[in-house]
Every structure is written in structure tokens, then in C-alpha cells.
Amino acid sequence: MSTADAIFFPARESLRLDERQYSPDLQAKLIETSLRTTSFAQAQELTMIWGGPAISSRHLGRVVEAIGDELLEKRDAEVEDFTHHRRGPEGIDPVHELAAVFVDGGRVQTRDETPGQGNGVHQPRWREDKVARLQTMSTTTYAIDPCPEPPACFLDPNRLSGLLDPGKILEKTSESTVPPPMPPTATTTDRWQPEPLVRTCVATMRPSDEFRWMVQAEARRRHFYTALRRAFVADGLAYNWTLWAKHFPDFVPILDFLHVASYLHAAAKALAQPDRAAQWVRDVWQGRVTEVTPQLLDALTQAGVGDETLADEHPLRAVQKAANYLTHHADKMDYPRYRREGLPLTSSLMESQIKEFHRRVKGTEKFWNPSNAEAMLQLLCWSLRDDGPTLADYMASRPGQPFRRTTRPETPTVAA
Image (cartoon, rainbow, N blue to C red; front, side, top):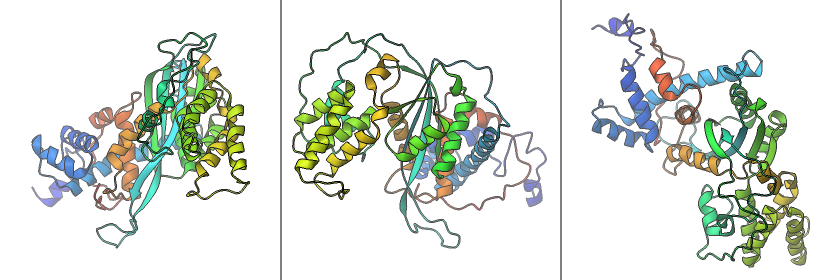
């Protein structure tokens, strides 16, 4: 076959081939293998095991990036349409019982991708990826608090650290000092938390001002704004609550209790009074935030700390951070009411999802071009979604391409 025949093969569209002329089934397998492994090098090894073609890890990265770019174009077009009201929610409104938006972020290591620098890692740095989980849930309301006592995992700093993404706030301690639980003041229901049903997710390396429109577009697509009950759960990062105020003001704002408990344990450790942490956690769980904050401020006053912001290495910095955290977010910490209304209190579902993303994109040995990372995040979103077309659906219906794509150079993905 001549070069011209290969480039202009007339049956390419009907056979759903792209410029590389891999069959749709083979290309889907290459994508799934690359997503389910921790690196393109590992995906290359598994490809050989299941009898696939001899493809280098760099070429495999280019194949994955090309599909990711297609999904990015589709996402950006949909966000643009939703933003300018050219597109509405999909299908008949199912009227969700509970729609919850969870927002968090992590770290991805990137390198500079300025043209002409050649292969290798140039100017590496950690950058934040922003992730949202849009979850429908089934739930129950209660006349009285269904769980007046905090679960043991919040009282034990070691167990609590395992619930959070590594590196967040709390350091694991060698010993666990958990006091026995106090007698319950009301009947505790065996399973009082709302049950997750269907999730989709949004992720990006782009600025927060672009991310918020992506989250709103996905919420509109899935009829979240007409749900019977609505909740927005996040930690204390300012941009989370800017997103809530601008796009989800009718959703109940809930400060993730995992982070609250972590701050309180860290403060007690800084004061060398670890036994106080459990009582503080219990007080906040039961709605007595205004009793805990003065205790933290009094501890700072007794130590001679004024209004100045302490350096991160200061022994009492954790106490100051906890006091500020509770002060600034007290309006999002009415946990007894949230439990009675059947709303989620923690970002545990979100933390699990962050780990799913980071298993593939995070690592001290992984260096991504920002554009490559954006493409991979989009592929991961499609592979994890339960609603709408999945990644498998997209690959099964992806049309062929009569011409080669030349919109982006095939920059190698380095060590990812």
C-alpha cells in the first residue's frame, strides 16, 4: 500500500479508524489498560501480556492523549453551551431525592513544556488538580439526632489520618488515646448516613474560575438544581466557597467534618493535651462549636500569642489554624441539623475518588506536561462516571477520521 493510500484510505470512516488505523476494540483496550495501571511503562508490559501490538510507552501515551484531547474538546463545548444557555438538562427531570456536590483537590507534578527544550524534566513543580464529585443519594430524615455520639474513627487520630489523603493536616501518631464513648443521649440508627446512588465527576488543571463553570454545567446536565434536597460539601479552601456562593447558593453548605476533626486533633497535639481532642470533636459533632473556639483562643492568649499570624514552624501554629478554621466556618457546622435532615457530613466519598485519580497521575517519579495531565484527568472522569455516556460508550461509537489530526504536536509524555 502506498503512502497516499494509507493517508487517504477511503474506508477509514466506515471502519471507524483514525490516523493510527488501530481497530476501535484495540484502541479501547489500550486506553483502559493505560488508565488501570500506574504508568505507561506498566501499561506497555501488560499490553504485551494480553497479546497486543508492540507499542512503546511513549507511543501509548500519545494514543491516550489523543483520545483525551477529543473528550476535552467535547467537555469545553458542553460547558460553553450550558454557560450561554444554549443547552439544557438532559432527559426528563428525575427529581433526585438528594443531590450532593463534593469539591476537593490534590497535587500533580508537572514539568515545563516550552517547545525546543527536548526530552527530559525541565522546571518541575507541583500543581493543584481540582476535582468535583456530583453524587445523587437516597436518604432519610429524622425527628431527633440519629447519631448524637461521634463515631470512633473521629476520636482516634490514627484512624482519622487513614480517611484523609496523605499529607493533609494530621500527622499519624504512634499511639492511640481514645476515651470510651459517652452514653448516647438518643437512639442511634444503625445506618443513618445517606446512601450513594449515581456519581459523575469533573477534574481539571485549569484555574478555579474555569473549574467552577465545569461543575455548574455538570450539575445542570444532571438536574441537580431541582433535587428535593441539595448539599455542598468541601473543606475550608476559599475557592470552594466562592464556587458555592456563585453557583450553588441554594445548596446547604457543609464543612467537611473529617477536616474539622483533623484540625482539632492537631491543635490538641500542639498543646501536649491529646485527651482534649476527643472532647472537642464531640462538642463540635453535637453542635457546640461556640464552646470550642474560645478554648482554642484562650490557649493562644495564655501563651502570649496575639493577632499576628504565626509561622508554620511555630509550635502553636496548629492551635491558631484550628481557631481560625472554626471561626471562619461556624455557619457551615450545624452537624446535628444536617444529620436530622439526612445530609452528608464528610467528604469521605470525595477522598476515595481523589485516591482513584492520584493512583494514576500522582507520584514523585511522574512528571506531566500540563496539557497531558488535563487529557488524562478527563479520561479518568469518563471512566469513573455512572451517568451519561461512559468511556466505553464513547470508544464504541467514536467515528473514524478521514484525515490526520495536526492540531497538536506529539509531545512525549515523560515518566508518567
